[in-house]
Length: 159
Ligand code: UDP
Ligand code: MG
Image 1: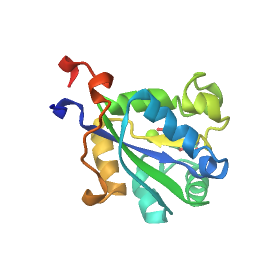
Image 2 (image 1 turned 135 degrees about the vertical axis):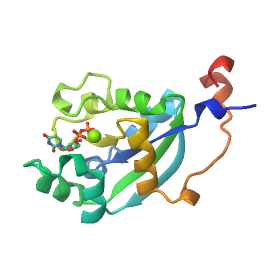
Image 3 (image 1 turned 90 degrees about the vertical axis):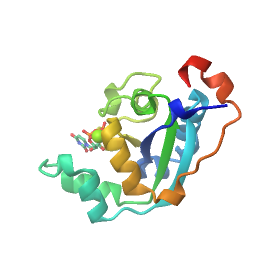
């Protein structure tokens, strides 16, 4: 069976607040239940260099130093997910940045109250997703395998 059409990838970070609050399993299971395929996962500590690259679009914001401090406050879990239009699907599951206004049912909407401590990061475009996956994962940390439920997750004309 050919699933070449559904191999778009995106990066999710489970942030320090979620690690501290014991929400890792809950968050990952929401993506799993959606039918999204996990192709890479690791716990890691972030350093200033990596955070400066990752949040370069926010470098001139007043909250940048506290964001960096927060993201270094404990390890994070980086996850690479794969699927059809998965960048957009994952952003929708996460909800908007300001968690206390995020839609109920979304990860941020259900699990967080803060703008900063909003439990997850998700890539915001296919272009950025490609860069971010490469930033957080080596090529041999991304796994190419077939998933037995795909015949029921995607219709034939979507694969
Ligand atoms: N952030 C913050 N204060 C703000 C805006 C953003 O602390 O006023 C943090 C928050 O953790 C957010 C991250 O910076 O998730 C990245 O901001 P971005 O605008 O890219 O939001 P996201 O893509 O995470 O929804
Ligand atoms: Mg962002």
